[in-house]
Amino acid sequence: MRSIGEMGRDSGLGVSALRFYDRAGVLVPAWVDPATGYRWYAPEQLGEARLLARLRRSGMPLADIRLVLAGWAGGDTGLVPRLLDGHLRRLESGLAEAREELSAVRALLGHKETSMTTATATARLTLPGAGLAAALDAVRYAAGTDPELPVLGGIHFDIEGDALHLVATDRYRMAVARTSATGAATPADGAAATASDSTSDSACDPAGHGGGGRVQVTVPLPLADAMRALLTDGAPARLTVDGGRVELETQGRQVAGQSLGEDFPDYRRLTLLPEGRRLPLDVPALRRALGGQEAEVCVLVLTDTVTVGDEDCAGDRVGVNPAYLLDALAAGEELLLEYIGPKAPLVLLRPDVEDAFSLLMPVSLEA
Image (cartoon, rainbow, N blue to C red; front, side):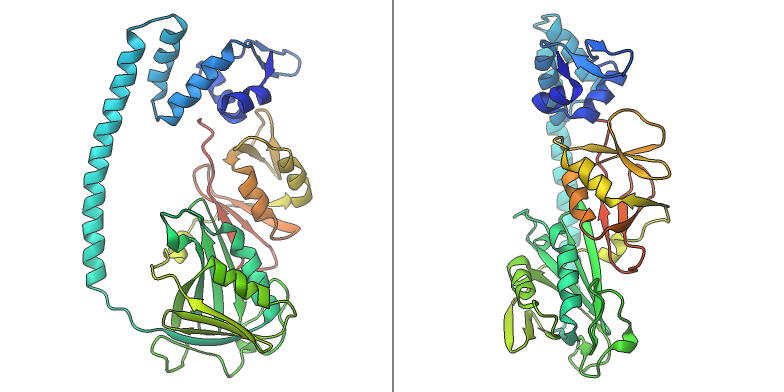
């Protein structure tokens, strides 16, 4: 007999998916301990679970999966192939329709690009080294690695007035941090300085004339990492953006390179979320609980606090990628989780820092 954890690991379904399929009557455990509620699976159920996992990865509807599993278990040699062929035809039809719609979207984007003009942006900002280092550390983990989306493989620098926001996202999570131009050292979180602290030598203007405009540039990860390597002693650093060239200088050392040419997504729009319920996080306890997770999805149970749940519990339940959540928990020992709803992004923020937070997309618990 296999426990639910062993079955999840061996089948590729995951514990949350196995619980869902049990409740749906698709893959029912061979035995449930009446005292503990623990689920146990017979050896012959492993093949059925692996087949179920493949069908779900193919996107087959649950109603058809039921019939496939029933036919497979009963040795039906006619029904199962017909169900598979029908599902494949639906996928091919859906793909053709999606291609048509995406072609129309590309045409709209092309028209928009040709109707826009891009001005050369210039900005110069003197920043606290400790604040810039902390901001880079706070967002670096969320940068993308997908070669098909190279613009997400960098850190976005958004300069407005004397404030610098750093942003990174890989589509499934996003991290935002802020630091400000200042002549004095700011706290390590890099987000507590205000515009009144800014030095007179800072300038930011799309036309290069000074005066507090907005300049945005996306720095590729190798260049961002080289910048971070310079920021070792907390000394002020001078950031210069001149068109597509980005340079950071501190203590007589400098690194420079070209920015990524594509437009970064409008991250401010992505953060326009309704207000949710804020819950304190026991960060050390969550780290310990998540450190032992082997599945790709774990369940957070939200009551007055946030815990990692193994079984059905009272309270809101939301699925997350445990590795991604561990990355976000590195932001500090005192964090809050803002819960908006089961399908909305989770927001992790520090109570003492207004402009540093991360968003984490939930994972469906419905298999």
